[in-house]
Amino acid sequence: MHRGDVFRMRHSFVLSSLVCLLIIILLIQAACCKESDDDDDDEATFKDFNLNVGDRIDLGDYQMELIEIQSVRDGLVVMRISKVGGSLDEQRALLLDSANNFDGGAEKKGVTITVADIFDEQSAKVRVEYLPGIGTARKRTSARPAAVPDKPELSVQKIFDKSQMNVGDEAKVTIIVKNTGTGQAQSINAQDIPPLPEFTYLVGYPPKIKETLDPGESDSAAYIVNAVKEGSIQVPSIVVTYTDGKKNSKSNSSEPFNVIIGPKSRADLVISVADTSPIALDEEGLLNISIFNQGTASATRIEVTGEVSPPDGLRATDLDKSFFEILPGDGANYSAKLSGQKAGGYTIHLKASYDGGDGYVIREGTAQVAVLEREYKYQYLLLIIPVAIIVGWIYRRYREYKY
Image (cartoon, rainbow, N blue to C red; front, side, top):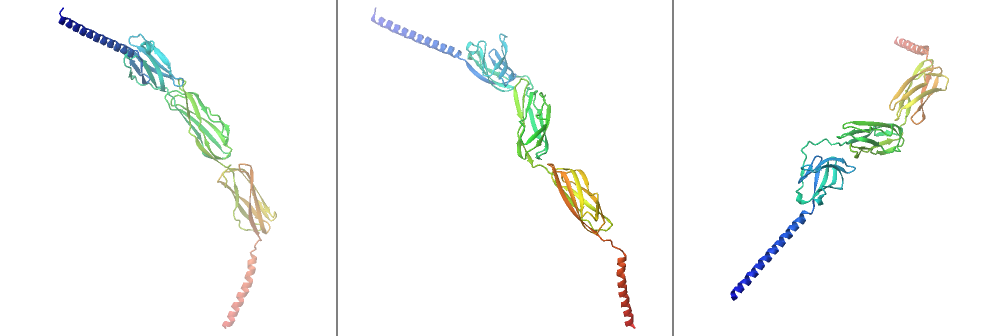
């Protein structure tokens, strides 16, 4: 064989070998890429969605709808998972932070659903795990009108009928609870604190509120306290606990406020006697007496007695008097009759005993009365005689000098 032919055959063989090697390399790379793509398709991914009741997640043939928040307290959410065609249609209660597999879960080309958070009675965060080959998860907002949520809300008020009082005063405490929400409040319990040491609790304590209140409905309770210790105190809140229709626990409380308790109120009576003109012997006069309450409490069961000193020579009637009550800032007036029987000066002693709010009290007052001797008219005539004599003598002397 010719030497040139051999060289060409060798060259052709080497070139063919190189082409085959290149094809083999390309086939190996393609196989590696396909295997890599298959590995990627086998790795699960996830996506979080904030859903309101009625919203759903669409993923390939899967539809995952949020039906309701069954219990915020227990962390239960109800979802419906279905597939187009009807091969899957299940409604299940999902527990917070607990993974739920459907069609074997994300690792077996199904889906895994986890409730990541519950915001309120109408919304939650839901995580969906799946293989990318299934498709892309998308949120679908519900086209249905939003249902009125079963969400009770209680407003609580605690009211004293007076913010300033005195030791011994009574106050009325009123508890008012109203459901301002959109659902029925159940198992209502008003938890007023243990009795405050500044008060004694008379009637109506502890307050009782209806156990169930519909939306817009209210109820109230009242009790009576008596102040026993002075000072400025803060009346703390009253806490009201309740549940909604799904037995979720809730609570609301009133606002604290201050009450000032002053010293015990007392009555303070003052006896006043008007100035009395002197009275003549065997004549009559009046003694005007007034009693005024300048204290801060009512004086009750008032008994006024009087006596004359010296006891002979001045007769006084109607000095004694009784009054059932004299209010603070109020007074009472009456008059006693006086009759002079012996000339001289006399003192009338008045004594008032009464209940001033913390026991009986005695107040006293005095009045001075003068009785004059009787005056006769002829005594004035005796004075005229010497005056007439003097006038006559002067007139006589005047006549004598004139002539």
